[in-house]
Length: 157
Image (cartoon, rainbow, N blue to C red; front, side):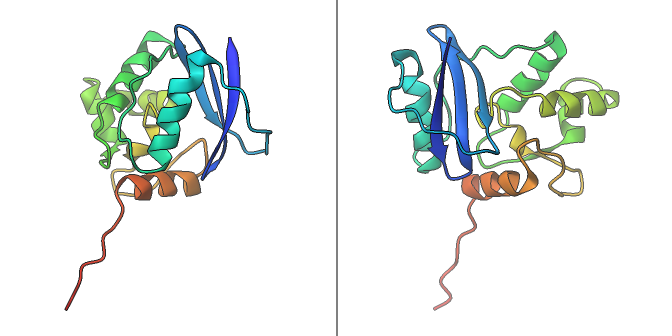
């Protein structure tokens, strides 16, 4: 098992994985020294995350090994289906899982997402369009959504 720390516009990200894939990507709220030597098995995830933040990548290709219940894994799979730059509501997520009554359980699984950004839990919003619930802080959720769907200024003249 290897752990590296990389700089992102939103703070230090901690990436944990091995030759089989990445177990977790977490944003830290405290500063941590950035890793200078990246193990070979984490070089692709580090490169792809940097490309994401440099606005040159919209999806990820490295293997993921999220640990969770079968229900959580179903939720996380649905999250991965949300297109880059798009959002869905928690109710939409529950309906995609086949039962609107699982909305709270789906929201809970969303909050336990172990793979920040790669499993895009930030793309789930309230039914009224509000930014609700985000383990990394709502300011980070707002930043990520704006990063993925920047508003464009139209030329008037």
